[in-house]
Structures are given as structure tokens and as C-alpha cells.
Image (cartoon, rainbow, N blue to C red; front, side):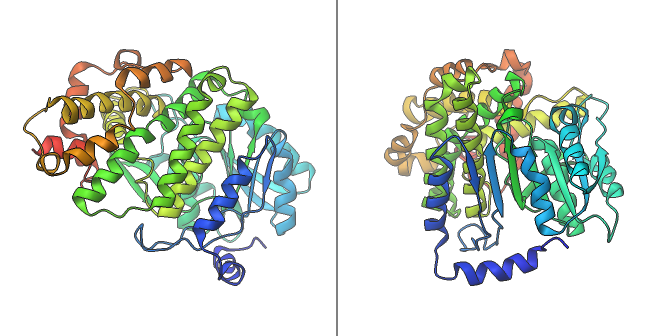
Length: 426
């Protein structure tokens, strides 16, 4: 029978009682970054330090980032004595990796079943009530031992929520380096048209096959790069919210995110060229960003005002019945727009309303933090280098929607004290 989370939790306390999670993470990430082949055994670590709400987030039993990683999935389940599996994919991701994975598991004597998630009326699979119910109905109570998410962000969010509700672990098989949410313990879902992040579970293992990732369409690769660039403004907003709103902050999580972001920027040209070095650097950075969120227990390291704009646009597209834009593509462009807004306000005194009290009181410190955020033009250049959209026009976001989102997007996360919120409430 598959090892359940309660058993893993007990084991990890015996193994790691004398280790602080910060030290463990440094060694893990150094190992991830040390070479082209990744095959790491990452036992669960209690990361509930109180800095991120006192939660406990599981790490991974196994993380594989290398060519041919799909071949290691079946042996992983055989090792755990787990045979009845449910593979979740959509039509595209099934062809990218699901079909080959399903065949290899059957040849190994496993019993996988398939849930081919159906697209919404807009043409894409959406992490909403319909998709969640479809997967829940495919799970056989008392029979399904593990779930397998084959795809990128949306499919993972559906699977991680279903796994959480049913008490079934899941493993991650990414098909594109498009988001940093593969490792997340929260699921951003669209419920009644509203974007809501709900508690879920992180994967027990990740099998990221470079052969699969390097065949991903350029727009998905560029989206992953855009998601990483958004860390420029999210890290700034995190410091600002800690200063002005008393929100929790963790230096280790921030440093991990900063290091992952810096690696992506250094490899921007290789990422745009979809070289093995570039794709490996991007996927490693996305995983590291996810680990930072697991360590902290919340999404602050990776999500600020740029994500709030992205979510606002997504909800408006759903309301209009329009096909969704790629998450990372929106985040990258939103990052450029937020950079312009923030630099204009803090350095040039251009405000949408009045000057925020926090800027009057802490202006020098805020401007020193903002020095780490590239200009709007520099961010757009990086997005172009990675082969993705760099402007609102390329995304198709109209002036009216953009202006409205600048005024209202901070309300999506009313508990976050971003600089955008301060500017709007001044």
C-alpha cells in the first residue's frame, strides 16, 4: 500500500529532528543546481516555523529532473507497492507524456486508469467546479491509491485539490516549464467565477523529463520565464507588506527566490533558444521558487501585485467567455506595468491619487528596495529575449480593463499590503 502522509510525517521527525529546514534546503538546492542530471531523494521536512502561518508542508520523496525521467515513474510506484493509479491529463498533455507514461506503467504490471479532463466552453481546461467534479468522480474510493498530474499548472491545481479532499497522494509529471506552482501546497481555483486559493497538498514526487520539457511550445516556455520575472515585484511587495502591514517575512525563502530569479535572468537567451541548459535552468528555478513557498507556508515570495493583475484579467476573461491567457505571460507583462507604476511613484512622485503615508515615512528604504526592480523597459527586453509577449497589446488586454485592474486588483487579496494597495488607498 502507498505510504500515507501520516506515516511520512512520523518518519521525518525521526530523521530530521536535529536539522533546521533552512540548512537542508540550502543543500537540496545546491544539489539541484550542480549538474544537468537531477535525481534527488528529498525526504519530508517539517517546515512549520510560524513565519508563514504555522503550517507544515511536505517536501518530496523524490525529485528527478533529467532526460528519460518518465522511465522512473513505474519503478517508484512498484517500490511503494502501489498499483491502482489514476492519471489526469488533457488531450494535449496526454499526447506530450501521458500516453507514453500510461503504456510504461501497464508494461510494468501497474493498473493505471485515465481521466482525460474536458475543456471548458472557452476551449481550455479550467481549474473550476466542473473539472474538479470530473476528477473526483473518476477516483474510486478505497481503490485509487495515488494520482498522477500530467500537465502544467491548471492540471496540477485540479489534482492537488482532489488529492487533498480524498486523502490520496499525487505525483507531478510536468509537461512544460510554464509555472512555479508544481510544488505548491495551495490550489488556485476558479469558484463561481472568482479566483480563490484553497488548501491542498504538494506532490510526493516530481518527475520532470527534459525530453518532454524541451518539446514544449515556446509560448509555454516563455510563460514560465514570465512567471519567474514576476518575482522582481513580488519580492519588493513582500518587503513592503512586512514593513507596512506587519505581514510575516522569511529571509531564507526570499534568498531562495532571489537566487532562482537571478539564474533565470542569466539564462534568458538560452531559455529563449530552448537549449537544454536553458530549459534545465528554467525548470530548476521554477522548482526552487515553489520550494521557497513551501518553506514559508504562503505565496508571498512569488506573488505580489503583478499576480493580482493577472488574476483580475483572468476573472474578467472568464466572465466574458474568452479563452484564457497563459498565466506566466500575464504575470510577465503585469510585472513590467507594475515596475513602471512603482518607479514613477517612488522616484518621480507620480501617483494615481495622493502620496501614501508609508512612502512619506519610509521613502528612503522603499526606494532602496525598488533599486532591485528593473525598469519597465528592461523587463520588456527580457520577456522578448525569452520569446514571449512583452506588452498589453500583445496579450490583448485593452486600456479599459488595464486601468480598472490597476484600481481594483489589490482587492483580490485584501490581506496583502502591497505597494499597489497603498497607492490606491492614499
